[in-house]
Image (cartoon, rainbow, N blue to C red; front, side):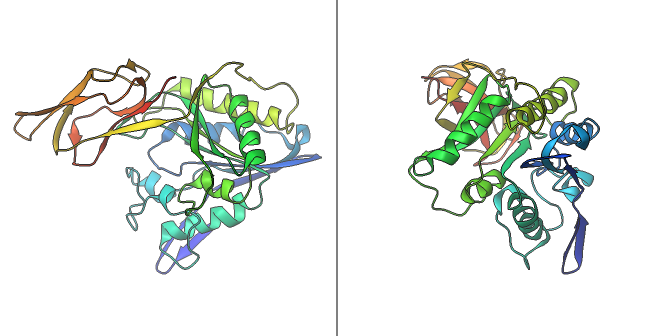
Length: 306
């Protein structure tokens, strides 16, 4: 799928698997962030496992939404215009390249889907614990409940509820929230860490997507539903108040307590500036694992455990 914006251009690699029998349309995006390799590799492998003859419905598979970021190994943003694709939805038809990509995905993939999933991983500065996620808005009970069931069918033992408020009134901004805003049940996967390719998360994502297709009856069989997953309804981000070096011996998945020391920050000469203290009881969903930090950078994302 070509994308042209002014003098800039790229492509979005998409495969459409149209099943022999009627059924729902599932939209899948990987590679919204170009350094999140596990979803990209899983999408590439998934395409070799889908046989339209054995499918009821259609899968629209975006192998890689952000090709320039992938090819240039760019952290979070498209190097062509410096924009984060997962912060500009629903996009702009005559906007920058990233905004145009978002517009095409919104209107050519999401809008044509009955269900939608956006797949992410820990980026090159990010140690992440695998989890599924969905948007929960109180004035959208039917869409929210369908999304919750989709999240359970992905087979992850942790499920994060995004939103958790009365209504979705702001701009979508995020890819899967654009689907939710269009009344399309949508989920996220976060699986993979540190911007590296490891077989386990790639296979976990691939199996989660196949399990979701079984849940939606696109494929035959039962999904890998986790009966009692940990439901995380609230998260807290711990941000750096300084620039310099960040140190922490903790890893994603560690349980933490309010008031405990999570790590510390030094200046550029190695002089201690401050300790980083935990603001709440919970579990580390993801954290910055390498030294460089700027003021305002997120150091930890902590899921509250009730």
